[in-house]
Image 1 (tube, helix red, strand yellow):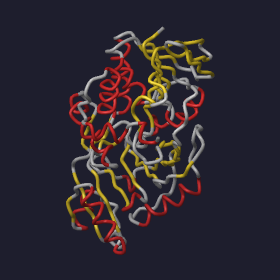
Image 2 (cartoon, one colour):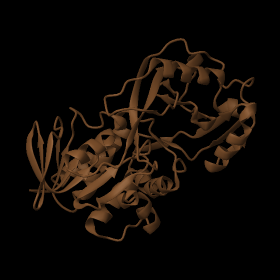
Image 3 (cartoon, helix red, strand yellow):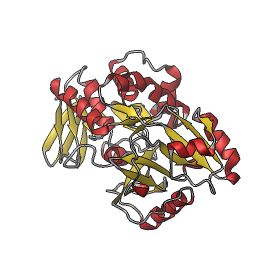
Length: 357
């Protein structure tokens, strides 16, 4: 019997595997044929530590030192928020919340040359945002976990989970796996996994978000452009490998599934983007979607289930999984080892599963 079975091979599960492998033997069960197939593989991949509710910000800030210490993980990007003349109040709220500096329209166009001065009245930006090399981060955690003997098994979807006197048995197409502690890091499927284990679901909601990759507008070199948000996160765009990713930034509730982009929603989002820029979108290189999963209060759930001290929730990271991974996995290690968490009691309480009782 292993010490830990982790269900889910996204950034949450793999970073937890690296941390828990310091404490005992680990098996990671991933339903798909490759790690990070769903939300983790479809992330916009930005480290902006001021993005999110206070507990998420705390976990993201706690992750900064570790992310910066890993060579090649972070690279400068910066961010910008744009708003029309009728959006002044919302713009001021976001400018203060993200700790952004006001820009003149001329200054904003120097950073984002396709900005449309006829439709953009306000702009603000900051340098405290970085691209995350998500594959490098996951592979680093995977290498660390395997170096300590962790098993990572693809195509191992949990078909049945049985509570044993001293742990759990998880049945998969790869056979049965037994472990003392079951860590539920199954992304959009976390409530489904809980039901299999006989644990009451907490009411997580997967939210679809669509993306499109378009050619570099006007043939521009995008390498130094910031990630740009429409105020209220009504859309965003981000340079990616010489092209531009554009998202309508929608949040549409969905059942857990291998998500795909909604063409109408994508078209509406691209129209909002086009309103604020000078270059129209003439073709798509590709489109896709991912599911960002939230708890009822939109704060992650991290900790042992009150009903069963052998069942550990690691769920509801929403769109913050990569930027908070070191802080979250450190908290997982502290809670499992019975140490006083470095993150502080207020954050521990904010993410604890017991808050839903």
